[in-house]
Length: 339
Ligand code: ADP
Ligand code: MG
Image (cartoon, rainbow, N blue to C red):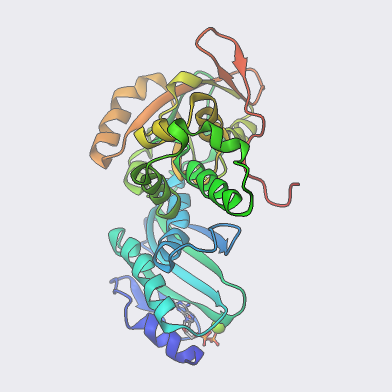
């Protein structure tokens, strides 16, 4: 199937938006940006085997490719509007493309995002998405706005996606080696039930971008970031940009029932602080905003948890045990090109 047939397959499935004046099919798309909005733009690439396991279903790859980008817009407090898709695929496989689009367009329609263009090439499987969102002038939520004394909040629960990856790694290691890997000892009762493993895997494959929460926090939160590389690493960016530190109450970190079942407390703590791929929001806000934040979260249908506070000392992120002693994860989070 030729490039143009693949593009046609994509074009025929895209839903319209009134502000898309010219979508897929010309040299560039034309959109109408409202006079009273600023444009927020982000891009993220997913490479096979790096950003998702090679055996990931194409529907899930499509979902995640858009999801990680909508998460970035949410973290700015921007309402997603349009996106482009640059697709490098090893073969012109229409069944794979259709399944990929099932996931991609399902998430797009949930957020009224329209695919307005892109590029289709042959090569190793790699998906690049650029997403555009709208935000009131000057109201986007930056990383550098955190104030000493702010509460630190996170949405949803942490560590599930990294837990799913750890279980996969264990399974792969078991296939090549008869001796069980060290990490399997962290599993209670010798292995997670398949229902637990499945619910963790959904968190890895189908991140839910917290768009309603992110947009609802405009004018309330002081700083926001989405957690893609682990809480410590991403909150660390907020600390660095804001010139202050963050103190996290380790016992307060939100944990899903599945994670609690699959891993012991020590392993959970590492997954929750340094695991990647959560795509939850981490934000800081003054104490006085607590009630308002609970209301916004309730309306968005997302759990939020207060996990600590910003502190004046420039000390990066540190964890506090119940007895007041400090704790640090052995590794802050995921960094490309680091050994
Ligand atoms: P050009 O050669 O002018 O770059 P292309 O042949 O690459 O044009 O693309 C034709 C049209 O199809 C353009 O409007 C482009 O944005 C769109 N397009 C190509 N690939 C994709 C894709 N994967 N997803 C969405 N739109 C695409
Ligand atoms: Mg092109």
